[in-house]
Image 1 (tube, one colour):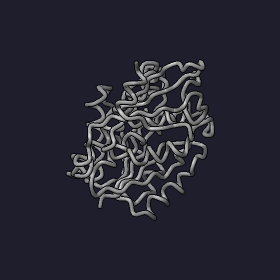
Image 2 (tube, helix red, strand yellow):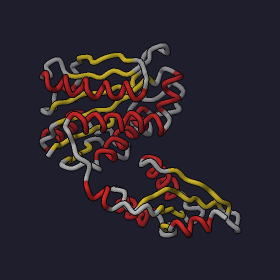
Image 3 (cartoon, one colour):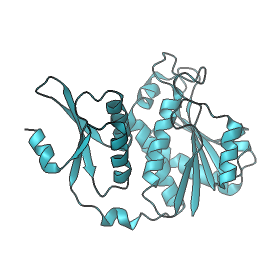
Length: 276
């Protein structure tokens, strides 16, 4: 069993001072969180992998680095990945990955493998594999790396880092690198259960915060949405495609029930009727 731990650097909502774009248009944690979410979701489709996130997934609390490291060590992680956004002068750009100066040759090999995958997928400037005495790298017992996925201080890269597409690209590149490095096998049940029945989610008009939460959740897991104005003037969101054989289908249906009682899953036929 491969045990992988993650942390999205810092916290959101202004909790961590200074960790945001210069124009205040994005908290660094927003990018970090998106990358971690996409990576973890991608790896959830593979056998013999356990994952643990040691930061606060809500972004409301900046979990101290000592506590993050303790969680990693107590859990017995084999590989720890810390995701960050970089900052420097406006001209600085590209992606760099760090390991501790005392990192083993295997640790460096894993980090470089992941780094190269991210560079190849994003086509961003390769700033290389570097060493740094970062606390999260120094205090975790597992092989560990810290990846800086772009510069918030660079206008071009900031624009990318704000998008779900770029966050997904970085996160899935990290996951795919892990899959190839550790020869992971895709779960059979994911393939066997595919039904090709597309499902949609009707949020029931003005769903308020519940609508926003479901919208964000589904975008992070690779879905899209469409809208229609109801006869009463309200806006109805349909989210899809959504296949019953997907690994996160059950998780999402549970989430739907928690978000709002008006939400319901539609069949493909119901969705077709809705689109007329």
